[in-house]
Image 1: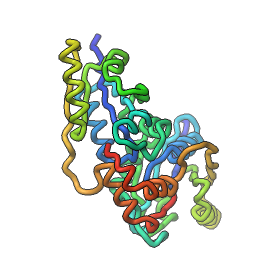
Image 2 (image 1 turned 60 degrees about the vertical axis):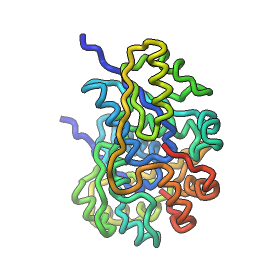
Image 3 (image 1 turned 30 degrees about the vertical axis):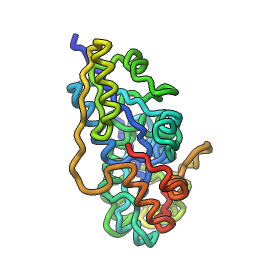
Length: 154
Length: 154
């Protein structure tokens, strides 16, 4: 029986944009054709601790959105406090994918994997060269700049 | 052979929130267990013509995001000009679902279906009673109000 690889990716996923979709699709590919992609969505507390302010959408909204994305097999909330070792032990990934803007997470996971001698590969996914809005910050900036002009509903 | 029903839903889908996911899931359910959900994403021009300003995300970004949502079997851009009859002839849905805030679209589709004697059912999906942000406008308001405090990246 072929072992189905588990790929783990993590993020805040506050305002979804195509860069998120490509990051997740690319991460899943790293696990081969039948990989399972598990996404750890950062809790509101984790975001607040790290950035000094909470995200726009609540953790339950963000979890619901990420769960609805086709490449995602399972989405879970992170621990109340950032706890990479706990997450790795719990979800037992074969591969951890980090985004181009997640150097801090990459460093911490690489160190953990080495220290604990875990059989986990850490892969950094490159930024996708493209036009258009490719970051939550970019989207938010545009909204703030244009408000209240861009007051469109659904 | 059982006819697989095609359900059509439409919208701008500028900043995704859980209300969108629930609207799409609920729409798909209206077509029974093996329904195909086709989503028409409004073009930038349509949004601009209707609201006087364009959306935050471009039509190609919005199309990419909607295509990545699990309930969506196919997402297409609308016509340059709002053209419901053209879309109905092209996609031949059994059911058209409109959101609670799409009364204008509902009226126009109901009239078209009656005038043209098309075998199409029009269903309005109710608003989901819940806490949290449930509209793109609500999300944008919160971002604009908090900017630049909520300058979180991925």
